[in-house]
Length: 328
Image (tube, rainbow, N blue to C red; front, top):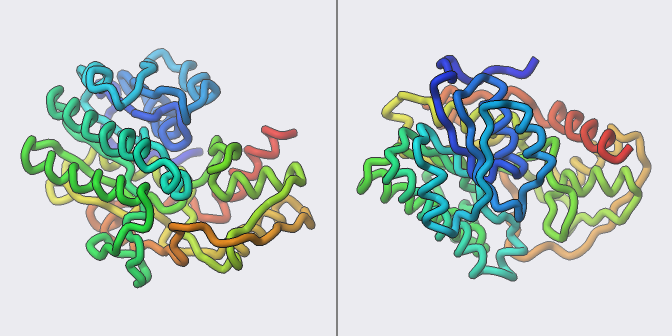
């Protein structure tokens, strides 16, 4: 039985999830629908989202889909109309892609974000939570990563997420919007896209091993990441939207496990669970990537009572089972 992350009755509460046809957004929307929210509206332009994710949500009568782009101010305004809460997940990801397409990343991740903030303020949204990223820590060398200690951004993607946090602070101070930001650390899980040039490492590894197609490890594979099952990101978003604690508002939180593993360890764990002897190839390190990542999650624990409910191993097995069924 999946855990519950809320104590309030959701039957009179109305939610907007931007990017709700995507990986994390669809999991957040599904949680809200499953737990009886009065209405869950999803805004997505289907560039990174999938009809298959929407099909899972359409089985609920309280689901509503709006196809549109957050770069359009009017679209954002209409999407926020009558909403109590907003979970803003719509964005373009990928550090290497942002290095190739910095203008596009700025248009979507910064311009679109400001459109959403303005729409939420105009429509008097009660609480607004948004996806930031561990990439904002940049070249800050110390581990674990603590929210108040940032380095220089190493990619346009990181710069867009850092800018989101700056704008959120301004909208809290100037417009009185209640905001909480979440710095995601390598979120993974079922329904994560394994295709394309910029797919995340875990679905790439699993698909490659299952299909015995080339799998690449960047650098020596000893770089570490705080791999975090998606259920924990859902938890943070639900708690963040519904919290009444004044001291918890208008802050940014690490959303992670608080433990890290090397990419080599990850690949070997995938092989073990898939009972495979398939080998990966090493290639050059990627520009803009950090060497090691590990989160301090004490702020989220203390102010939001955030407590990871699914660990790395459990999340990996669940993800592998999903893709085994998908490709069987």
